[in-house]
Length: 157
Image 1: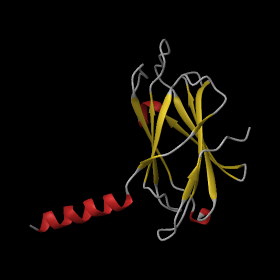
Image 2: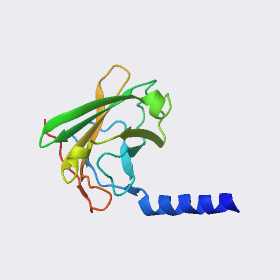
Image 3: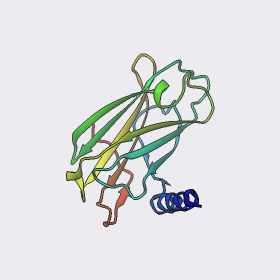
């Protein structure tokens, strides 16, 4: 009985936080990884707390990658705060096939960005480091009690 109450509380917390698909823009690349969807969790995102991002891709044929990476630039007012790199084989699976697959990455925004808009530009690179796809979006982070907004943005080059 005690375990059931604990599980109920966890399920209520998950339902309250949740996740959602967010709008994004494609950058000036060939889109060979075929990004179809970006999901964030928690929704709403909060400054100082871990943000999970899942990118669903469906690479076009005949493109096939044995490995690769994701580079994510996080910027504020056009200034890059963080440039993160993730191994595709560690945040998803390799080889990259011509079928839908998910890539799971995370980022913890500084508490100081509460109320500010961060832009995320995410590049998918092939095994030799060539950028094959790019998407961007922006989010305004809040504290637990504040509302948030998000919007699709075009990266600053």
